Structure formats: C-alpha cells, structure tokens
Length: 406
Image 1 (cartoon, rainbow, N blue to C red):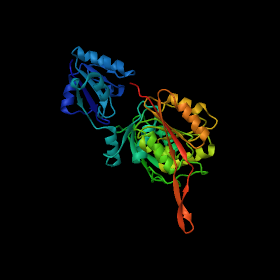
Image 2: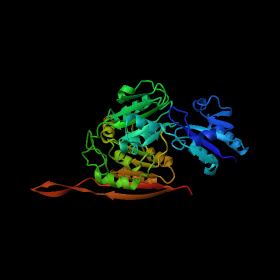
Image 3: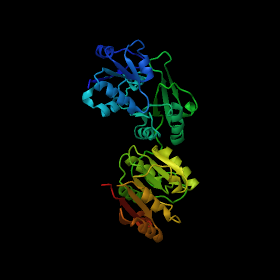
C-alpha cells in the first residue's frame, strides 16, 4: 500500500509548508470536504468528496492506496484534533499514514481573544445527539471551547445552557476565522437564542460568576433549597453514593430525586456521564431545577413525571438510586432491574417495613446479588445546657448488583 498523506489546512488559508506542498503537488487522488477541495481548484488530481457514510469514503481511499495511487487527504487544522485523523488511523493503521498538521480553529480563536488556552477543555459536538459533554466541561472547569455542527449551533447551545444553568455563563462566538467576513461577538446566552451564525464557528463559554453553592461531596443538609423536610440526609446520602459506586461515564438514574441531594453529588462521581433526576412532585421538581443551577451540577437532567413511564426514552442505566416513589408502585423496581446494564448497581433507600420487604422480594432474583444495610444515625442537639444525641429514623439500604456479561 502506498502511504496516505493527511494535510491540515490553516485557518482561512491554503498556505502549506514546503514538505506538505511537495506531497500535495504529486497527489493522484485528493480526498476532502467540498470546502477543502475548493481551495485547490487547479489541481489536476481526481477528487473524492468525503460524505456520509464515512466508511465508504475510507474504503475507496484505502483501495486507491492499495492500488499504488498517491492519496492526499485534506482536513481542517490538525487532523488529529477532533478531525478525520482518528478514523484513518483506525481504518489504515499508523504505518500507512503521514500527517502535516496546521493551526486549529480553537488555537486561532484563542489568538483572536488574546487568551492562553492550554487549560481550556475542548468539546466537539459534531454529530452528537446531546450536550452532556459541554455541561460536564462547564460544571468541572467553568469554561469550554466548543466545535459546533449544523444542529448544535451557537443559538441551540445558548438555549440549552440557559435552560440548565440560567444566565451564569457568557459566550463568545467566532465566525469565519481567517476569511474576509471574520467576526467575533460576545453574548449572554439569552441574547444568542434565535440568532443565525455562520456554520464555520467556534464558541467559547465561561462562567461570569461562581456557583452559589460550591459543589462537593458531603454537602450540609441545609445547603440545598427544599420545600419540606423530606430529603436524603447526609449520613444516608454518603453511604448510598458509596453503595452506588458511580464510575466516570456511567448513566445514572435518581428516581424519587426530591430536591436533588443525591443527584447533584452523584454528578461529581460519574464524571462525563449523565444523571437523570426523576421527581413527580412539581414543587420539589422546581427546587431541583434551582439546586442544579445553584451548585453547577449541570450534568443532572431534571425530569418531571412518574417513573417508570418517564424513563422510557432515556438510555439504559449503569447505576440507579431509588430514594422515593416505591409506595403503590410494585412494578417500578422490577422494571428498573430489567433495564439495568450488566455489571450495574441498583440501590434503594427505604424506611417502611412493607417497602423494605417488597424491595427485598423483587431484588432477590437470579442474576442479582443483594445486600441489606441498616443505617441508624444520631445528631447532637442541645439539652439542659449540654448536648445529647437525637436519633434519626433508621433507613435500610438495599444494594443489588447485576451480573456482568462473561
């Protein structure tokens, strides 16, 4: 196979270094997007436009290289930075490829903004159906550079962020970098909703003020807004999260989430993964929305409705916490256990003896390993000029682990 050369084109320019230019001049097949190919209108080589499905394009260029043709792939910026480089490496292997990188759009954006960018998380939303990676980056770092696509436009991202985080984040949109129509504009998310932008853009988001409640494990019970005294208190919350043992990237459900005491802390443990916090009470759900914004736990998606019905369109979970909603719903745990992915964990917090027994019967089944732990915590409170321990209600944690596929 003749080696394939991948050449990155600089922002707004077709200028190449001598080595890349020499390879390009001898190409027999040019592969790239329509815009990249148009940068070399006089090149005599045959042209192959990259189109979906990508596998067909990769097969065609691999066949050309195998036949001894000199194939050059044109890409934006650095082909190995959210570019076609990864797909080519997976298809052809590193021995068959040579790369000539150029300046990326993110580097050019940082230069225009006069900002150092080595600490920026960079998120590509090309072809993604959700914005969880953006929420994860902003929740953890407070800033992110974003590569958009025709669906996840700056306006669409502004609307999503406004809904989840309120107006805490500002955004800078840089369009047509290096081209005659280049421009850079700063917005609040509410200003960008509904606007149109060039498809060639990079967006930089950053927090304009800190979160009201610094997000951490072991939040005090009074840290979150709540309409009543019904919530998962700190000792139970800590042991429940330990029993769940969320891993980075896990899909996590908090069913009967209340105001989000478990959900917001769980978002710290399944870094990069979504947390779906399901609550049927409208007042508690409203406080849940407020608490997500106040803590910056942006990967938590508040879901108003009755489980299991509202779970139907969600991805199957790796971890499930049930802190409420068992009463009168005997089918709930059974459905959750069935949807739980192999190797996943389902943890139930129950107080009533009837709920504990129903949960035990449901989770005592082939393919699940069940353990029960009773938690009895006491808090020191004043009495007669001194302190004494006042006992909280005992809580039973039922933890079921699903067999992993062999």
